[in-house]
Amino acid sequence: MRLDRHDDVCTFHIEADSHGRSERLDPIAAQIVASDMIIKVDLGRVQVVTSPDLAQLVEMHKEANKRGRSLVIKNTQPAVRKVFSVTRLDQVLCID
Image (cartoon, rainbow, N blue to C red; front, side, top):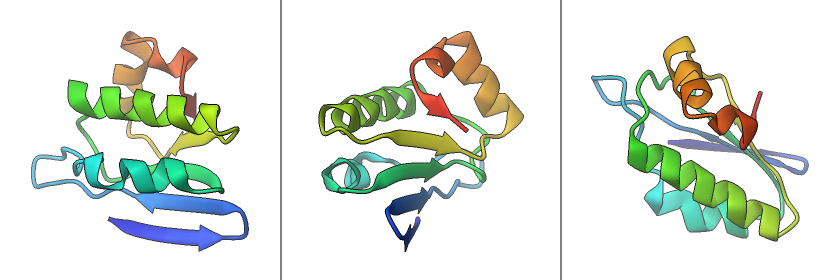
């Protein structure tokens, strides 16, 4: 995972394993929502998201909203975007 900070935006670049699954978000979740910046989660290298991944993203979104911040998911692959669509999370989460 790589972290970039620029002005008031904090971007977390999530890596994928050899099967295209995302790294676990648990270790960074608290750090992400505690940030006072706009939070972007880059899923560009992720081809597969699991139920726990989706649950973690929803929880991070809720916590960011409670703190008056936004969480943006960016660079989603077509298969990942389809999962967001089928689960209707594309109506809940901000997907760029």
